[in-house]
Amino acid sequence: MPVSRKETESAISEFKKEYEGLAHLNYVILETESDFQNAYGENATSATEAWNGKLGAFSRSTNTIALALAANHDKSEIASTLAHEGIGHSGINTFAEQDKRALLEAIIEARNHPGALRDNYWRAVEEAYPDTKRSEQAEEVFCLMVETVAQRKGYNPQAFNHAWQNSVVQQNEPLQPWGLAQIAEHVAQGLRENTRQQQIFPENDQAQFRATREVEKLPPATQSKLDAIIKHLDTQNFSEKERAIVLARCRENALREQARDTAPAEIRPPTLDLER
Image 1 (cartoon, rainbow, N blue to C red):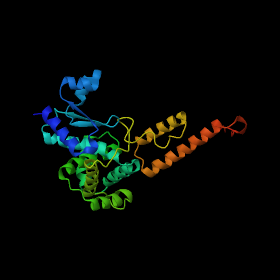
Image 2: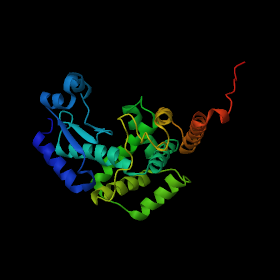
Image 3: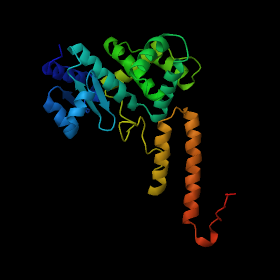
């Protein structure tokens, strides 16, 4: 039997009270035809079909958690869904972009090593999200871990520091379930205390990272070109180092092109015809 609206509203209220850092998010309950109509307008019918069997979702661009009552069967399940979407998908954006990328890379690397992260978490995520890119799957692994730690509240700062420094920053030891659990606990604790703030602001729900980084000082036309490159990079499985190299070269080329186009005609460098 689906959870009731009253129970869901109570779970949301308790969640916002416990995690003050997530109280500002938008929360949408999807139960009736009117709910879907208000949320999706003319796309309500297709949205209702798409939501069949789904527990919840997080919109990165609007900071909205949506909960489908038909798929959640009791208040505890709603609490797990709120943790997954809120502490997980929203909370991971309280990391600086470089740190979030390093965390996702550490989770991806853990997939190559024996243990529960590979055999349980990664297997479950790959079965549920077979067509998504690796970084998306890694974020889902993090969110899956969040569901369990939200119930335990066992944050250990020393354990977090060890896991973060050795498995994420230096990457000299594979990330283990206990280490990812402590990272999730670290995020949850900061959201409880309202000491963690959002640092990544994706411009759409398909983007995991801020789309306008490193291009603020460039002219609009040049920025638009780099935005397109950045969006493409975000759909690939580049490491942080590889990504930084590509962006640096693209930025250098953009600045060189900008300088050439704005220089007086008599001192502009000649355009080379490289066609044979």
